[in-house]
Length: 60
Image (cartoon, rainbow, N blue to C red; front, side, top):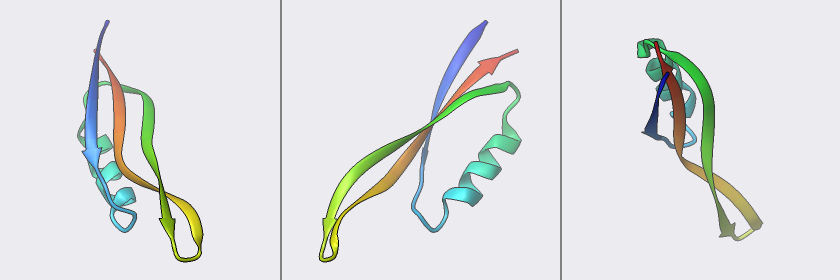
């Protein structure tokens, strides 16, 4: 078995569309989707943002 890790740069307004398009193009099986969550501080307090996703794929 071979594994590949893909990085998808996303923003909160286009995350679902980008992930859906990417997953439909894969040939192998998706093992995991890992978000990179980074803390941010705004006027109303602390929050978190996702700036990219890692997709682990098992090649056939």
